[in-house]
Each structure stands twice: as structure tokens, then as C-alpha cells.
Amino acid sequence: MEQTDLWRASHRLTAVAGHFGSGKTEFAVNLALSLAADGLPATLADLDVVDPYFRSRERADLLEQAGVQLITTSQACMDADVPSLPPEVMSLFDSGGRYGVLDIGGDPSGARVLARYRRRLQQSGGRLLCVVNANRPLTDTPDKALDYLEQIRDTAGLPIDGLVNNTHLCHLTQREDILAGARLAEEVSRRSGVPVLCHAVPAALAHGLPGLGAPVFPMELYMKKPWE
Figure 1 (cartoon, helix red, strand yellow):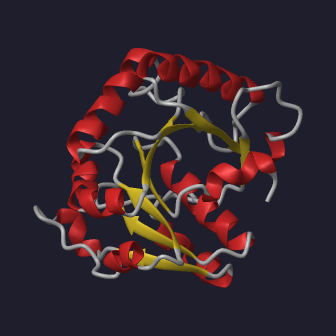
Figure 2 (tube, helix red, strand yellow; figure 1 turned 180 degrees about the vertical axis):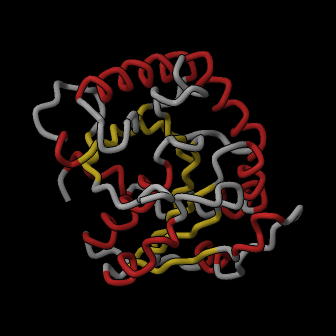
Figure 3 (cartoon, one colour; figure 1 turned 90 degrees about the horizontal axis):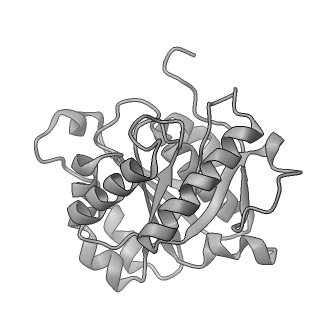
């Protein structure tokens, strides 16, 4: 693992939150796959009980073939007032050997799921990352992004440990999108004190970017739109 990649495995447990359309699940899937590619035992827990689309379960075969264990909620949880969460999640906190990526719902309602595991996540030394996409209307300005971060932090009862700039337009993403997102993320970081952990970019655009001040995380696009 190169020095610039050490952030990926610096914590055994990583919870990932992000607004609908931010690319949160794409980032979570790529992070779990990258850990497995490094020979680490990895688990991806799909705990998004808010968004019926872009669920990591859609890539169950891909994850299994790569050696990533997948934990998912039942589809019935989507309509439940008090979602029933899979008991297998608790094994992530008890197992010191497995790396876990927890894909959390993208709004304060989804963050309430994470609040259930707050104490265990803290005891395990886990971290909470927020994915920010400057091309989404709810996080397209520093003020909006800061408001979103505060909502997630207050609902989950956990500090946010890092920002992930994942500014994109799906397959239409250009370098200009990434750079604009980097500027927004840096301003949010300056005002919040939360560091920019990485810039998640399509693999085809990962080379030739100017210095961004944080590592570039090349991603393959695995998550398809519901109509594709």
C-alpha cells in the first residue's frame, strides 16, 4: 500500500454518510473493494434504510467475488418506522480482524441508524466520513454543505472525522467538476475544522490532476441508475 493510500485502512471501521446523489454508495463499494484488494478481510454493511435505489446489494455478486462480505437490511425496512437492522452488524464491532464499511442513509433520518451504534463505533475507534458533491443542490455551496454536516453530526451524536469530495456528474464528470468540488470541500474544511480525507474521482480522470492537498481515490463506476 502506497503512502498516499494509508488513509483507507487507518481505521478498522468506517461509516459513510452522504446526501442522495452524492455518490456515497459508490464510494462505500469502492472503499470495501480496495481494502479486499489489499488482502484485508473486508465487510460492507448496507444500512441505508432511506434510499430504495443505488443499494450496495445490487453488486452482491461483484463483492462476493472480490472477497467482500456483504451485510444488508431487508427491503421491508424501507417502510418501517423503527427499522430492524441485521444482527450481523454487531459482529463488526466485536471482531478485531475485519475491516468494516458502513453505508448509512443520506439524510438525518438515515443517520438515526448510526446513532444506534454510536457507543460501539466509538469504542471500536471507528470514524464517520461525509461525502460531499458540489453538483448536488443540497450541498452546492459551503453554507449548505456545512448545514448538512451539522444535521448528520447532531442526529448521529458523533463527530465527523473526514470529508470526501466526490463531485461528479456520473459518466459526464469532467476534471472541472472535480476541481470545483475540491475548492468547495476545502472551504467547508476550513470553516468546520473537518479535514478533507480524499478526492474520489472516476479512474479515467485520476491522472494529471493538479495538487489537491489530499489523496486522489480512483473509483470504478459500479452503481447503475434504476432505469439502466
